[in-house]
Image (cartoon, rainbow, N blue to C red):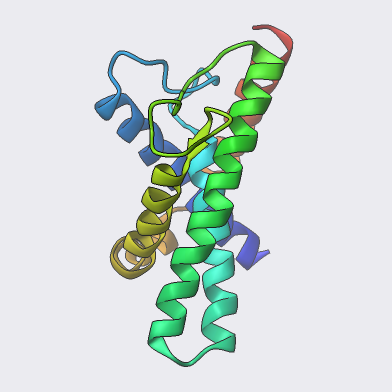
Length: 164
C-alpha cells in the first residue's frame, strides 16, 4: 500500500504541476480534456520515469550508464505515450491538442524526433534535479488528501467520457 500511495502522490503532484506548466506556456490552448486542474499524462509519465529509474539504479552502478538509460527511457517511453495519447484523443474526442508537423522529423504529427530529445532531457532534469526536491514534499502529502483527489479525479474522468 505504501508504494502505491507514493506513486499516487507523484501522479497527482505532477499532473497538477504539468497542467499549470501547459497553461503558462500555451495560454491560447486548451490544456487537456479533463475539467480539473490536472493533465494526467504528466503524472503517468513521471511515475513511469520513477519506476524505471528504480530498476536502473538496482541493476547498474555506473553513473554514465544510469544517465544514458534514464535519457533513453524518457526519449522512447514518453514519446510513445505522447504519440498514443494524441492518437487516442483524436479518435475518442475528435480533438487535436498538439501538432508537431513543423518539427524536425515528425511522427504522425503527434510527436517528433525533436520532442523525443526534449522528453529525454526532461527525464534527466526530473531524475537529477526535480526528484530530489520533490522527495522532501511527497511524504508530507496526507493520504486522506490523495483519497479525496482520487474521487474528484475519477468523477472528472467519468464526466469527461460520458458527458462531454
